Image (cartoon, rainbow over all chains, first blue to last red; front, side, top):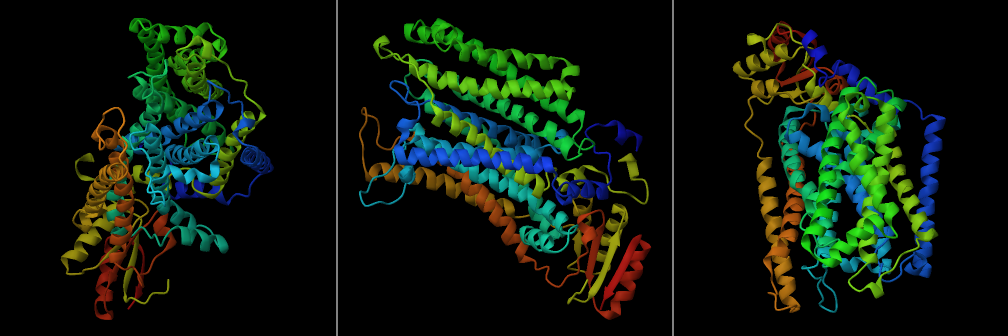
Amino acid sequence: MAVIAHDPSLPTQTHAEVTRDVVKTITDPPTRGYYILAGTMAFLTLVLFVTLGALLKYGIGLAGYQPPIMWSVYITTFVFWVGIGHAGTLISAILFLFRSRWRTAVYRSTEAMTVFAVMTAALFPIIHIGRQWVFYWLLPYPNQRFLWPNFKSPLLWDVFAISTYLTVSSTFLMVGLVPDIAAVRDHVSGWKKKLYGMLSLGWTGADSQWRHYSRAYLYLAALCTPLVLSVHSVVSWDFAMSIVPGWHGTIFAPYFVAGAIYSGVGMVLTLIIPLRKVLKLEHMITDYHFDNLAKLTLLTGSILFYAYAMEYFVAWYSGSPFEQVTFWRRAFGPNWWAGWSMIICNAFVSQLLWFPKIRTNMASLFVISIFINIGMWFERYVIVVSSLSNDYIPYAWGTINPTWADWCILAGSFGWFGLWFTLFYKNFPIVAIQEIKEMIPMPRRKAPAGGH
Amino acid sequence: MATSMPGVLGSFDHIDGACDAIRELKASGHKDLTVYSAAPSHELEEAIGDPVSPVRLFTLIGGLTGCGAGFGAAIWMSRDWPLLVGGKPIAAIPPYVVIGFELTILIGALSTVAGIIILSMMKSLKGRPYHPRFSDDRIGVFVPCGADQAATVEKLMTQHGSVEVSRDA
């Protein structure tokens, strides 16, 4: 037992304690703080839908769109939320294939975050298109005019990528939840037992169920792994396939994927640092897990640092005056504040995580995570807006003035995301009971042969 | 604990005891055992000795179907309404890789989930007893048997450390 106690990746509880502690997060009555949080999120969600109603009635002109910048806050926020959605699948699927033990305690919360972030992101292209009621024109469906969408357009690739990602990540989350919901079912009574009983789909943990489940989970993880890398690559091609200076770069796919994971891990930290305290899960989600999350942040932050440097280098080395002007204006043009916010918050702040003391200090980690969230929104703002603001002809250069409709939708998106997450963590196991138990050696009557 | 299937249900605290009991029950000719556990375990899998799940076939067939459907739909739809742009081929393969890839993953994942459901339903667990502790910290072993064998099975389970044995035979 002494060896087990010294391995920080292994849980310290027994099987029964794991069930008890996680089920308690659901069965404990919600506190006043929870209602205030959920109420705030519900209010912001209302703001989102009221603004969306106004956009439906009066048109997209309410937002600060003006030529040449016809992609602005909504597309910026779309890319921001899609990016947030990447850490979850990285942690749940890719680290599962790598047999990384530290993922187990945090993967459920990150996976839920992924699903809700992609649900939030999926709203934005629909908000942005203007005539929201015909959004289904994006899909290939038989119609009276015998028209099909253009499969050579990266925007259509994006429709396929985002809808696949939303479907597959939701499926992965739900499949992982089934055995845990069954554990909750067996610990509650009354109508809750009936509800969780229905949601557990008749799960009993019989060998005939585990046999197919364990294999299928492996294959789902294997399918999710290339998917997570592909989705933000496809999002990056929305930009890179065009010839706009600042967008037309071959580094965009890896640059976007690294940025997505970086922003996603940032949001994970923002969510689970307070969450583990509120739900009293400090003994399950320990400093060790945060240390690893911080190392992942440092790795992706450093890749991003390199990508930022390389973008400027490529702009200079290309010899293209259009590229050079675009990047000069990013640093010293009218949007200089956004350009520098992105570099400071992402490239420089992440480097603080080289220090182990910072990586395991919750207050500093939380502050850094807020910087990451802000920095990554600004990164997308810089890429989307500042690139469009200086096209090839200086006569057509312009700036944007975001309006209340932009800011209300942005704030509302945090409410929409936060409301789903708040409801989830109080009603479903936020830590994967079954996977934690899998790591805890079952008690034995006799010592195993060969010291295994 | 009401059950319609006659047999003996044993609960184990220790994994090695449960595995030994499973092996011995199988060796003595008992078939169709049901083993409950809160988490999957290789040790239990070995003792039960079932072959690898065929769920991978669902993944493979789903993935290939998705790939074919993605490329097929994109090529057919492009040819159905041909738009010649910049002298490029109507049915261009590189841009359609994205569609083919995404549908490979989508249909592959959905058919994998369908595989879990279909394959799990192939063995009906109806009428087999279950105890809530099996989703917590105990391993359950249910042996379908008649009244004539129940006493022997009970004894065997107790010998291997079963902490609770119940009979419905």
